[in-house]
Length: 341
Ligand code: UD1
Image (tube, rainbow, N blue to C red; front, side, top):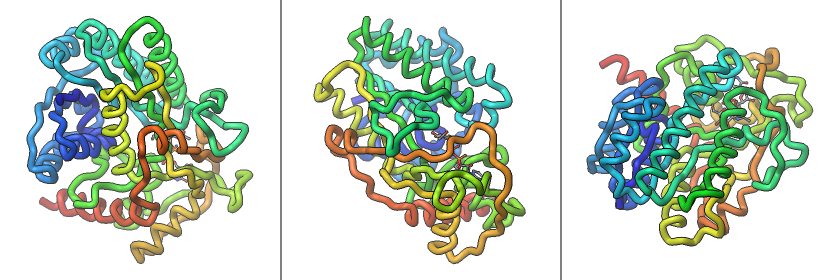
Protein backbone atom coordinates (compact mmCIF):
# COMPACT_ATOMS: atom_id res chain seq x y z
CA UNK A 1 0.00 0.00 0.00
CA UNK A 2 1.31 3.35 -1.05
CA UNK A 3 1.39 6.36 1.28
CA UNK A 4 2.41 9.94 0.48
CA UNK A 5 4.46 11.63 3.19
CA UNK A 6 4.89 15.40 3.01
CA UNK A 7 7.79 16.90 4.96
CA UNK A 8 9.39 13.47 4.83
CA UNK A 9 12.97 14.68 5.19
CA UNK A 10 12.08 16.53 8.39
CA UNK A 11 12.53 15.30 11.91
CA UNK A 12 9.29 13.38 12.58
CA UNK A 13 8.63 12.71 8.90
CA UNK A 14 11.92 10.87 8.37
CA UNK A 15 11.44 8.66 11.44
CA UNK A 16 7.89 7.92 10.29
CA UNK A 17 9.09 6.85 6.84
CA UNK A 18 11.38 4.31 8.56
CA UNK A 19 8.41 2.96 10.52
CA UNK A 20 6.16 2.84 7.44
CA UNK A 21 8.76 1.02 5.34
CA UNK A 22 9.37 -1.43 8.19
CA UNK A 23 5.62 -2.07 8.17
CA UNK A 24 5.63 -2.79 4.42
CA UNK A 25 4.11 0.44 3.16
CA UNK A 26 5.43 1.89 -0.10
CA UNK A 27 6.42 5.52 0.48
CA UNK A 28 6.34 8.60 -1.74
CA UNK A 29 8.06 11.52 -0.06
CA UNK A 30 7.50 15.20 -0.83
CA UNK A 31 9.67 17.94 0.66
CA UNK A 32 10.93 21.32 -0.52
CA UNK A 33 14.07 20.98 1.67
CA UNK A 34 13.41 24.49 3.01
CA UNK A 35 14.31 23.34 6.52
CA UNK A 36 16.05 20.03 5.83
CA UNK A 37 18.54 18.30 3.56
CA UNK A 38 18.63 15.11 1.50
CA UNK A 39 20.76 13.38 4.15
CA UNK A 40 17.80 11.55 5.79
CA UNK A 41 16.90 9.85 2.49
CA UNK A 42 20.15 7.87 2.47
CA UNK A 43 19.95 7.20 6.20
CA UNK A 44 16.38 5.86 5.93
CA UNK A 45 17.40 3.61 3.03
CA UNK A 46 20.38 2.36 5.02
CA UNK A 47 18.26 1.57 8.11
CA UNK A 48 15.41 -0.12 6.24
CA UNK A 49 17.32 -1.47 3.22
CA UNK A 50 14.38 -0.18 1.16
CA UNK A 51 14.02 2.61 -1.38
CA UNK A 52 11.30 5.22 -1.87
CA UNK A 53 10.41 7.99 -4.33
CA UNK A 54 11.31 11.59 -3.49
CA UNK A 55 9.93 14.82 -5.01
CA UNK A 56 11.46 18.19 -4.18
CA UNK A 57 8.48 20.48 -4.51
CA UNK A 58 6.86 23.26 -2.52
CA UNK A 59 3.32 22.43 -1.38
CA UNK A 60 2.45 26.13 -1.54
CA UNK A 61 2.69 25.68 -5.31
CA UNK A 62 -0.71 24.20 -6.10
CA UNK A 63 0.06 23.00 -9.62
CA UNK A 64 3.24 21.16 -8.61
CA UNK A 65 1.38 19.61 -5.67
CA UNK A 66 -1.47 18.46 -7.89
CA UNK A 67 0.99 16.99 -10.43
CA UNK A 68 2.54 14.71 -7.81
CA UNK A 69 -0.78 13.77 -6.23
CA UNK A 70 -2.21 12.91 -9.64
CA UNK A 71 0.72 10.59 -10.37
CA UNK A 72 0.09 8.84 -7.04
CA UNK A 73 -3.68 8.98 -6.76
CA UNK A 74 -3.61 5.22 -6.03
CA UNK A 75 -2.14 6.09 -2.58
CA UNK A 76 -4.13 4.84 0.42
CA UNK A 77 -3.38 8.03 2.28
CA UNK A 78 -1.34 11.15 2.92
CA UNK A 79 0.54 11.94 6.09
CA UNK A 80 1.03 15.70 6.12
CA UNK A 81 4.03 16.81 8.19
CA UNK A 82 5.30 19.66 6.03
CA UNK A 83 5.19 22.90 8.04
CA UNK A 84 7.38 25.40 9.83
CA UNK A 85 7.55 24.64 13.56
CA UNK A 86 9.73 27.11 15.40
CA UNK A 87 7.74 28.90 18.09
CA UNK A 88 10.03 31.97 18.52
CA UNK A 89 10.40 32.41 14.75
CA UNK A 90 6.63 32.39 14.42
CA UNK A 91 6.35 35.05 17.12
CA UNK A 92 8.82 37.22 15.19
CA UNK A 93 7.44 36.50 11.70
CA UNK A 94 3.80 35.43 11.90
CA UNK A 95 2.93 36.01 8.23
CA UNK A 96 5.61 33.52 7.16
CA UNK A 97 3.88 30.91 9.32
CA UNK A 98 0.29 31.66 8.25
CA UNK A 99 1.34 31.57 4.58
CA UNK A 100 3.51 28.49 4.66
CA UNK A 101 1.54 26.29 7.04
CA UNK A 102 -1.96 27.10 5.83
CA UNK A 103 -1.59 27.54 2.06
CA UNK A 104 0.18 24.17 1.86
CA UNK A 105 -2.58 22.52 3.92
CA UNK A 106 -5.32 23.98 1.71
CA UNK A 107 -3.53 22.79 -1.44
CA UNK A 108 -3.14 19.29 -0.03
CA UNK A 109 -6.80 19.08 1.00
CA UNK A 110 -7.93 20.36 -2.39
CA UNK A 111 -5.67 17.74 -4.03
CA UNK A 112 -6.98 14.91 -1.86
CA UNK A 113 -10.51 15.84 -2.83
CA UNK A 114 -9.68 16.18 -6.51
CA UNK A 115 -7.83 12.87 -6.79
CA UNK A 116 -9.92 10.87 -4.32
CA UNK A 117 -7.19 9.92 -1.85
CA UNK A 118 -9.18 8.33 0.99
CA UNK A 119 -7.18 8.86 4.21
CA UNK A 120 -5.40 11.83 5.75
CA UNK A 121 -3.20 12.18 8.83
CA UNK A 122 -2.33 15.68 10.02
CA UNK A 123 0.52 16.81 12.28
CA UNK A 124 -1.02 18.91 14.97
CA UNK A 125 0.50 19.97 18.25
CA UNK A 126 -0.21 20.19 21.95
CA UNK A 127 0.34 23.91 21.51
CA UNK A 128 -3.31 24.11 20.33
CA UNK A 129 -4.33 23.82 23.99
CA UNK A 130 -2.49 27.02 25.00
CA UNK A 131 -2.34 27.47 28.77
CA UNK A 132 -4.85 24.73 29.59
CA UNK A 133 -6.93 25.24 32.71
CA UNK A 134 -6.64 21.58 33.86
CA UNK A 135 -3.93 18.97 33.38
CA UNK A 136 -3.38 16.45 31.90
CA UNK A 137 -5.17 17.60 28.74
CA UNK A 138 -7.57 15.24 26.98
CA UNK A 139 -8.67 15.63 23.39
CA UNK A 140 -11.80 17.36 24.71
CA UNK A 141 -9.88 20.04 26.63
CA UNK A 142 -10.92 23.33 25.00
CA UNK A 143 -8.38 25.45 23.13
CA UNK A 144 -7.13 28.51 24.95
CA UNK A 145 -5.67 31.49 23.16
CA UNK A 146 -2.69 30.41 21.03
CA UNK A 147 0.59 31.60 22.59
CA UNK A 148 2.34 31.87 19.21
CA UNK A 149 1.53 32.16 15.50
CA UNK A 150 2.86 28.60 15.11
CA UNK A 151 0.29 27.32 17.61
CA UNK A 152 -2.40 29.39 15.91
CA UNK A 153 -1.62 27.81 12.51
CA UNK A 154 -2.18 24.40 14.14
CA UNK A 155 -5.50 25.51 15.67
CA UNK A 156 -6.65 26.92 12.33
CA UNK A 157 -5.32 23.87 10.47
CA UNK A 158 -7.37 21.54 12.65
CA UNK A 159 -10.47 23.68 12.14
CA UNK A 160 -9.98 23.74 8.37
CA UNK A 161 -9.82 19.92 8.35
CA UNK A 162 -12.90 19.67 10.57
CA UNK A 163 -14.93 21.89 8.24
CA UNK A 164 -13.56 20.02 5.21
CA UNK A 165 -14.59 16.71 6.85
CA UNK A 166 -18.23 17.82 7.11
CA UNK A 167 -18.58 17.89 3.35
CA UNK A 168 -16.06 15.27 2.15
CA UNK A 169 -15.73 11.53 2.56
CA UNK A 170 -11.98 11.67 3.30
CA UNK A 171 -11.21 10.11 6.68
CA UNK A 172 -8.82 12.19 8.78
CA UNK A 173 -6.86 11.88 11.97
CA UNK A 174 -5.35 14.87 13.74
CA UNK A 175 -2.37 13.88 15.87
CA UNK A 176 -1.49 16.35 18.61
CA UNK A 177 2.20 15.85 19.33
CA UNK A 178 3.60 16.83 22.68
CA UNK A 179 7.40 17.43 22.66
CA UNK A 180 9.15 15.03 20.28
CA UNK A 181 12.75 14.33 21.30
CA UNK A 182 15.52 11.80 20.71
CA UNK A 183 16.69 10.10 17.55
CA UNK A 184 16.64 6.73 15.82
CA UNK A 185 18.50 4.09 17.89
CA UNK A 186 20.74 3.30 14.88
CA UNK A 187 22.49 6.62 15.58
CA UNK A 188 22.40 7.63 11.90
CA UNK A 189 19.06 9.44 11.79
CA UNK A 190 17.90 12.37 13.88
CA UNK A 191 16.91 16.00 13.54
CA UNK A 192 19.08 17.82 10.97
CA UNK A 193 19.47 21.38 12.17
CA UNK A 194 20.45 23.96 9.60
CA UNK A 195 20.45 26.84 12.07
CA UNK A 196 21.00 27.41 15.75
CA UNK A 197 18.53 25.21 17.67
CA UNK A 198 15.46 26.58 19.42
CA UNK A 199 14.22 23.33 20.95
CA UNK A 200 15.49 22.20 24.30
CA UNK A 201 17.09 18.83 23.54
CA UNK A 202 19.25 19.87 20.56
CA UNK A 203 20.24 22.91 22.61
CA UNK A 204 21.32 20.58 25.42
CA UNK A 205 23.31 18.24 23.14
CA UNK A 206 24.97 21.11 21.24
CA UNK A 207 26.02 22.70 24.52
CA UNK A 208 27.38 19.40 25.81
CA UNK A 209 29.41 18.81 22.64
CA UNK A 210 30.82 22.36 22.76
CA UNK A 211 29.06 23.87 19.72
CA UNK A 212 27.18 26.25 22.02
CA UNK A 213 28.66 27.79 25.11
CA UNK A 214 25.81 27.70 27.59
CA UNK A 215 22.18 26.68 27.85
CA UNK A 216 19.71 29.14 29.30
CA UNK A 217 16.72 27.70 31.13
CA UNK A 218 13.94 30.04 30.04
CA UNK A 219 12.29 31.05 33.29
CA UNK A 220 12.77 29.84 36.85
CA UNK A 221 9.71 31.53 38.33
CA UNK A 222 6.84 29.55 36.82
CA UNK A 223 4.19 28.02 39.03
CA UNK A 224 5.74 24.51 38.75
CA UNK A 225 7.55 22.35 41.35
CA UNK A 226 11.04 23.67 40.46
CA UNK A 227 10.03 26.93 38.72
CA UNK A 228 10.94 25.79 35.18
CA UNK A 229 8.36 24.96 32.47
CA UNK A 230 6.85 21.48 32.32
CA UNK A 231 6.46 19.52 29.07
CA UNK A 232 5.66 15.98 27.96
CA UNK A 233 8.82 14.80 26.15
CA UNK A 234 8.13 11.85 23.88
CA UNK A 235 10.59 9.79 21.85
CA UNK A 236 10.35 10.56 18.13
CA UNK A 237 10.22 6.82 17.28
CA UNK A 238 7.12 6.43 19.48
CA UNK A 239 5.51 9.36 17.66
CA UNK A 240 6.55 7.86 14.31
CA UNK A 241 4.95 4.50 15.05
CA UNK A 242 1.66 6.18 15.99
CA UNK A 243 1.37 7.37 12.37
CA UNK A 244 1.58 3.83 11.02
CA UNK A 245 -1.07 2.75 13.53
CA UNK A 246 -3.28 5.75 12.71
CA UNK A 247 -3.11 5.01 9.00
CA UNK A 248 -3.93 1.33 9.53
CA UNK A 249 -6.84 2.34 11.80
CA UNK A 250 -8.30 4.43 8.99
CA UNK A 251 -7.62 1.84 6.29
CA UNK A 252 -9.36 -0.83 8.39
CA UNK A 253 -12.35 1.50 8.94
CA UNK A 254 -12.01 1.40 12.70
CA UNK A 255 -12.71 5.12 12.96
CA UNK A 256 -15.88 6.36 14.64
CA UNK A 257 -16.18 9.59 12.66
CA UNK A 258 -14.40 10.94 9.60
CA UNK A 259 -12.27 13.30 11.67
CA UNK A 260 -10.75 12.01 14.90
CA UNK A 261 -8.19 13.55 17.24
CA UNK A 262 -5.50 11.84 19.31
CA UNK A 263 -2.98 13.16 21.82
CA UNK A 264 0.52 11.73 21.37
CA UNK A 265 2.31 12.20 24.66
CA UNK A 266 3.72 9.92 27.35
CA UNK A 267 1.43 11.30 30.06
CA UNK A 268 4.42 12.44 32.15
CA UNK A 269 5.15 16.08 32.88
CA UNK A 270 8.91 16.76 33.04
CA UNK A 271 10.44 20.14 33.90
CA UNK A 272 13.29 21.73 31.95
CA UNK A 273 15.60 21.19 34.95
CA UNK A 274 14.54 17.53 35.21
CA UNK A 275 15.22 17.07 31.49
CA UNK A 276 18.70 18.54 31.94
CA UNK A 277 19.38 16.21 34.86
CA UNK A 278 18.13 13.19 32.88
CA UNK A 279 20.62 14.11 30.15
CA UNK A 280 23.47 14.50 32.63
CA UNK A 281 22.66 11.22 34.36
CA UNK A 282 22.32 9.04 31.25
CA UNK A 283 25.25 10.46 29.28
CA UNK A 284 27.62 11.33 32.14
CA UNK A 285 28.11 14.78 30.55
CA UNK A 286 28.04 17.83 32.81
CA UNK A 287 26.02 20.61 31.26
CA UNK A 288 26.86 24.30 31.45
CA UNK A 289 23.53 26.03 32.09
CA UNK A 290 21.99 29.00 33.87
CA UNK A 291 18.45 29.98 34.73
CA UNK A 292 17.42 33.11 32.78
CA UNK A 293 14.38 35.10 31.71
CA UNK A 294 11.16 33.62 30.34
CA UNK A 295 10.81 33.15 26.56
CA UNK A 296 7.91 34.80 24.69
CA UNK A 297 5.30 32.34 23.44
CA UNK A 298 5.95 29.62 26.06
CA UNK A 299 3.13 27.93 27.96
CA UNK A 300 3.83 27.22 31.63
CA UNK A 301 3.06 23.53 31.77
CA UNK A 302 1.42 20.90 29.63
CA UNK A 303 1.26 17.11 29.50
CA UNK A 304 -1.05 14.59 27.91
CA UNK A 305 -3.75 12.21 28.82
CA UNK A 306 -2.98 9.56 26.16
CA UNK A 307 -5.69 7.01 26.96
CA UNK A 308 -7.60 7.59 23.75
CA UNK A 309 -4.63 6.76 21.49
CA UNK A 310 -3.66 3.87 23.70
CA UNK A 311 -7.16 2.29 23.52
CA UNK A 312 -8.15 3.06 19.94
CA UNK A 313 -4.79 2.82 18.15
CA UNK A 314 -3.29 0.28 20.59
CA UNK A 315 -0.33 2.62 20.82
CA UNK A 316 2.05 2.38 23.76
CA UNK A 317 5.33 4.23 24.29
CA UNK A 318 8.41 2.01 24.03
CA UNK A 319 10.94 4.60 25.16
CA UNK A 320 11.44 6.86 28.20
CA UNK A 321 13.22 10.20 28.61
CA UNK A 322 16.55 8.50 29.39
CA UNK A 323 16.38 6.52 26.10
CA UNK A 324 15.54 9.76 24.31
CA UNK A 325 18.47 11.65 25.84
CA UNK A 326 20.91 8.84 25.08
CA UNK A 327 19.81 8.56 21.46
CA UNK A 328 19.91 12.37 21.06
CA UNK A 329 23.49 12.35 22.36
CA UNK A 330 24.46 9.51 20.01
CA UNK A 331 23.01 11.52 17.12
CA UNK A 332 24.83 14.72 18.17
CA UNK A 333 28.09 12.78 18.06
CA UNK A 334 27.18 11.39 14.63
CA UNK A 335 26.57 14.93 13.33
CA UNK A 336 30.00 15.96 14.59
CA UNK A 337 31.48 13.04 12.67
CA UNK A 338 29.49 14.01 9.53
CA UNK A 339 30.69 17.62 9.76
CA UNK A 340 34.28 16.38 9.81
CA UNK A 341 33.82 14.27 6.65
C1 UD1 B 1 6.60 23.82 21.01
C2 UD1 B 1 5.23 23.22 21.02
C3 UD1 B 1 5.25 21.83 20.46
C4 UD1 B 1 5.94 21.81 19.13
C5 UD1 B 1 7.31 22.39 19.24
C6 UD1 B 1 7.95 22.48 17.88
C7 UD1 B 1 4.14 24.17 22.98
C8 UD1 B 1 3.59 23.89 24.34
N1 UD1 B 1 4.72 23.16 22.38
O1 UD1 B 1 7.34 23.15 21.93
O2 UD1 B 1 3.94 21.37 20.33
O3 UD1 B 1 6.02 20.47 18.68
O4 UD1 B 1 7.20 23.71 19.74
O5 UD1 B 1 9.13 23.17 17.92
O6 UD1 B 1 4.06 25.25 22.45
N2 UD1 B 1 13.85 25.76 26.72
C9 UD1 B 1 14.83 26.30 27.51
N3 UD1 B 1 16.00 26.66 26.93
C10 UD1 B 1 16.25 26.50 25.59
C11 UD1 B 1 15.23 25.92 24.79
C12 UD1 B 1 14.03 25.58 25.39
O7 UD1 B 1 14.65 26.47 28.72
O8 UD1 B 1 17.33 26.86 25.12
C13 UD1 B 1 12.59 25.38 27.36
C14 UD1 B 1 11.38 26.12 26.82
O9 UD1 B 1 11.18 27.32 27.49
C15 UD1 B 1 10.28 25.09 27.07
C16 UD1 B 1 10.98 23.75 26.96
O10 UD1 B 1 12.37 24.01 27.09
O11 UD1 B 1 9.82 25.23 28.36
C17 UD1 B 1 10.75 23.08 25.63
O12 UD1 B 1 10.99 24.01 24.61
P1 UD1 B 1 11.06 23.59 23.09
O13 UD1 B 1 11.90 22.38 22.93
O14 UD1 B 1 11.44 24.81 22.30
O15 UD1 B 1 9.59 23.14 22.73
P2 UD1 B 1 8.20 23.87 23.02
O16 UD1 B 1 8.31 25.32 22.78
O17 UD1 B 1 7.65 23.39 24.32
